[in-house]
Image (cartoon, rainbow, N blue to C red; front, side):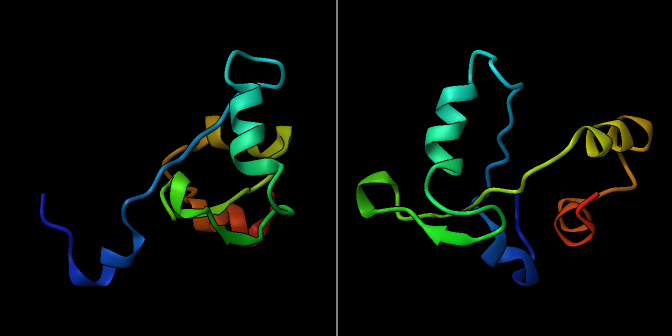
Length: 83
């Protein structure tokens, strides 16, 4: 797959989520939430890959909006509008 030049800085990219108390909850919390406040972009240490990370906190309203119109919202929408 060839990535257009205008998008090359956006990859690699990982989206990760979990239900509170679910099987991946502690891993997501340790890997993203515990490092920095919500919406702050930070860089992991070299021994963890050196990638930038950001925790975007979501609410039940966001989840409901996504299930009703999943193709109309992007991650940028979520970050900017804070549904």
